[in-house]
Length: 361
Image 1 (tube, rainbow, N blue to C red):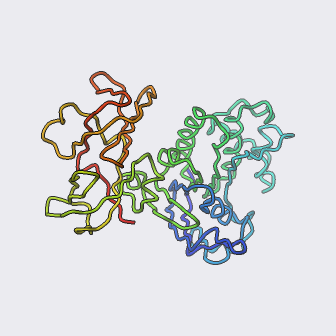
Image 2 (image 1 turned 90 degrees about the vertical axis):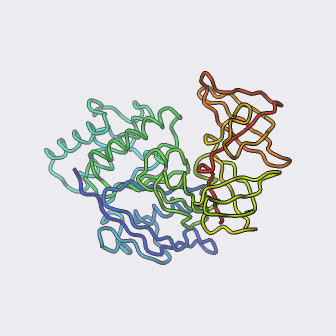
Image 3 (image 1 turned 45 degrees about the vertical axis):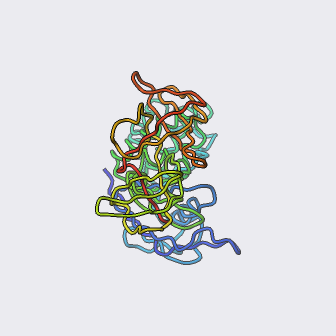
């Protein structure tokens, strides 16, 4: 098992003319950690990865790997494995020769090359395909070859730039789990780039959410989903309805805000909110539920009108109008005993005060 590298980015900046692609990014990544840079196109995540790999030179800041500064050090002296979305395999080489290439460049002995390539191909479950060419492989198999090639020289750090973007949904989900398995078995530090928030939640120990070159939040998947630091993170990570509201009052038990025509009770964890403050409520669709006859004495039960409903097999999504202007998304499991409604029906929708997230930025 490898010993993964500790990585630190210190106030990293990258400018292209008047465009600041990365703006004072600071991150600390532990040995053996799987960290994902997540954000929309143009957020600076790939530029950050290219600076780590040595393919781009920062405008300012520092990159440290195991305490050693990397600025000015060429890519081939950083001992980093890189996997790209395009696979970047040599079409005229067999699987064996593609995987062996980094070892050949390092002038490793032929007998050791055979052993290492064999271990790498077994690790990614491609044993027996050594003699094939890339054109004879599926997209998923080609990506496994690229992963084996990036790991065969045993780097302490592996960079992956949208490696599953060209694959179909089912294969992408399978390879997400495969990459996590390889990570656990090998122990290498992984920095992974994606714009797919579901992929990031599935694979990562921690996630750095980026927007316009800046770091919005750096946390575990659970923290990002349950306690987003900003409105952007709440909206980008997972599905949510974001609703602007005004604080009416607060007491030791929690906070009351005005939503549409009625009050909404929140728990006391919405700290820092006082009367008349404007806040944003984050309502996750799976936390809302349709109820019959008010659903009992619980707080936060509202009348609503179904404006649309889409059956998705395992779940049904409902868009509900609450009050005059607010539309919320509800996701219900498709199982016996769950209330189902059609477009135009009047229903009751409920949410536990503990399931309402409040952000102020």
